[in-house]
Length: 498
Image (cartoon, rainbow, N blue to C red; front, side):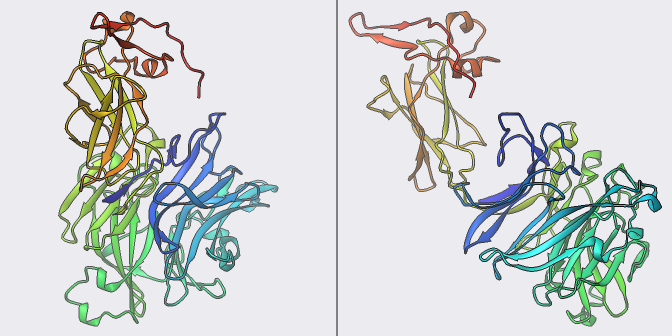
């Protein structure tokens, strides 16, 4: 199954959860990786307390999860003058190395740029390190190589003058391609001494972009092989890896914040001629619909799929195109909040086998009504069907209450149609009919008579959580002497908050 990852930029749920104090963990870049020879998931997160402040001295961590969604490796950043920068956490399976970023908070005199004599400058850095040994292969600090005067971002409190937001490694040469959002430029960094090899964009660009195309604010810059790029037929024979490189870039050219450089944000592929020092747009993909939520103010991603398609994250939506710009897939959300935007979107193969049990809610309008089951299993990618087993007693025996039902969406509704069932167990089945997992024994909830009149045969609007929290042993039982079903009206006692 393909994992389509579009995690909200600020999340109060998994992979992190809300702490007892109600803190928000800001989550970035949930994506599939290969670690220790096996598929895993990786992401970064920061604890912003109750208010998201990207420049705060907060704690953070980079995390690797296995296919059961258990943490197998985690690196904690306690906060202080150097904090985790969540824009990048990239693994390289061929070398067992990883890239991550940090923000250095430097006390200095910023009065020449309109600041204070005792002020704080945020200067981003990155590290290339080995996952097995923890040894640092290379580290680079923006403040050591990028003058403050190159910033295209005016002075502000806690001035993030460079804002590094992507790092990519040239595995063959050992150099790096990075993007400074507030430098308005892409840089090639020497992997030995950290010096700047070339700049694309910004105040000191070494390249002229053909056809008048203008780059200013970019995300998710990646080196791409020439073979995977749609090259112009007229110059294809003149292009080689010795003289040209290709970059995929998310261009925030129209974002509603800065002055636009294009009619919309877009995903582009640039072909750089290292000899002529020119850059040419050879691929460009724009939002499929004329909607402001797709203009991607501060987010965006471009991914090359193994079949040649381009998978693009627009911040609040995502699309898949062929290289001929044919739209194959599109999905979006819009809650009206900036906190629901996705920094990057990914698509790739993933098999998840959670160590939790399937979640089940069993409901019946009355003790004389058919039972309805609602079942889901967060993160289980191989489930194709559900089988419900029922019993009149919590200890069983349990037997099939209906034929297996095809899984539909995240949560599947199963209407048993066989009368009242007091207790259920639900089994998750794969494509071969094998059992992948089994829920705990779940008691069927029946609303008290005070609620039953506002409920329906399938649900109790607004009272689902109340029913979940009713602490009772039995709601319905058989009177074996009279052969009648008796509906008890229990005293409602809510469990303590979890």
